[in-house]
Amino acid sequence: MPKVVVDNDMTNVRMSDEYLITKEFNSSIDFSQYIEKIGMANGSYIDAVVDYCLKSDIEIESIKKLLSASLKDKIKTEAESLNLVKGAKTGKLPI
Image 1 (tube, one colour):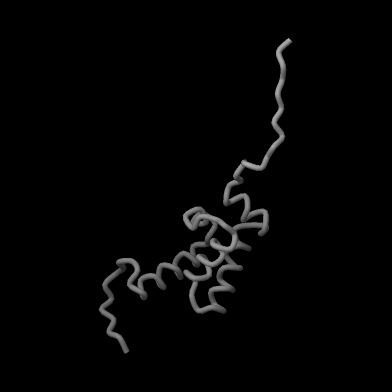
Image 2: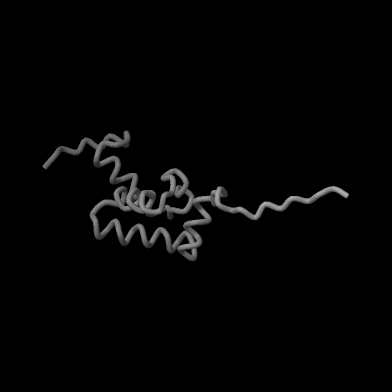
């Protein structure tokens, strides 16, 4: 009879980042609302996302599909205003 070896050691198994986030929040909407609330309090949505990812040991790229469309627009607008990405040339002068 062949031997069956069972390895129940789960110490080296890495769970997906989406699983870890949805384990903490009920849905992606709850996660987006949490990030928006923190972003409004801090004044920066980008910083809120980066801080959450650093504290939770999650890759920033993995939360893209969990963010709402309105939060993605707010992050994009903030990045354009900080000249982090090329956006539409609005010709705004600094005040």
